[in-house]
Image (cartoon, rainbow, N blue to C red; front, side, top):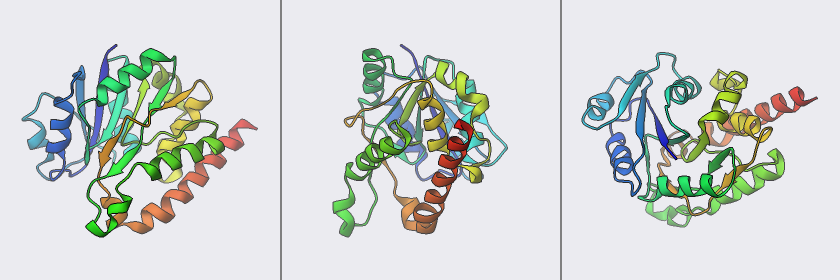
Length: 230
């Protein structure tokens, strides 16, 4: 089983080194690491060139456009994705392969744990909240929800849903969009031990985006798919 890892990058010079070193230091190495340059204007790409990665340019700004480009060019059986401000534990690729080998799942998710919350928020540095979110979402979407910072799917799965996925960020919550598309064709697994450390910077810097805009987009996405199912 072969694995491509896709990392989306927009001005990530403070984080990309740790991300790439975590991926290169895997117990079972990924077959390729793709960094999607989504109009970086800092030293992100300069740093990336020091590592054995493929750098792909996507001029259209946004998570969906960058994700689609990265997934489209991925060469191997499984496409794994993490964020540029994430740090994968050494067994991340190993656990991905184990899960896809055990069951004929179409995609796979795992929990997130924030690594940079203030000391007073130490009690929030846990996988509890992402685990609860995934299992609660399963009640709504009939499948575990994928989270962009820690997910994997079969390349064949992506090829089947590619043309159905939304293309503009503000129309949908991108993770829920592909979750619902994949859920119509197969099972999405969830491994509580496949943990990804990720930054909580979005919560700290733009709480309105995280707590208001994201839920609104999730609702729009659910309505979009519910309407199409009628």
